[in-house]
Length: 127
Image (cartoon, rainbow, N blue to C red; front, side):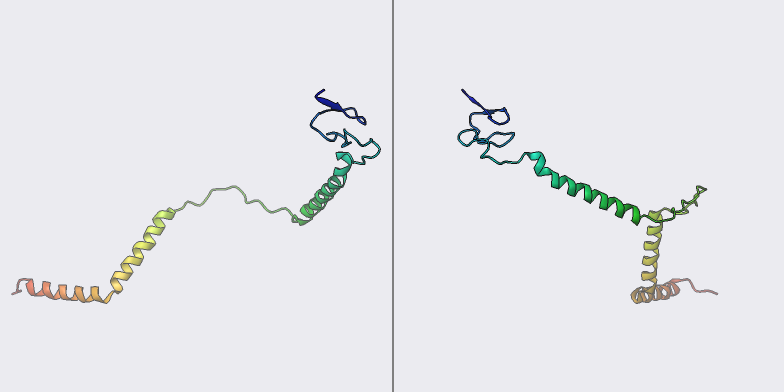
């Protein structure tokens, strides 16, 4: 026979099983009274009570941490129109920074001064 029937609960187990899959009774030797395995439902009871208690504590914490007054919702109205997009604004700031750096650079000031002197010397004489 390839199956063994449990003497306590009547479940038909595989011949390779040494204990009943349902109640845990030893299938080949010990009497049902000798085996004191607890059913899974009894083992899970403390865990389920702990889970329920944790859910209750979380619920109390969640509801007491909420503000007592409702948060005001802004009224719907016309949105202010933006004149520049963020990209254009960034480009203007960057261009302005470059212009300031060029104007404040002493070598560019000296170059502009020499260019003005050269243009003055090259211009035709006035009568």
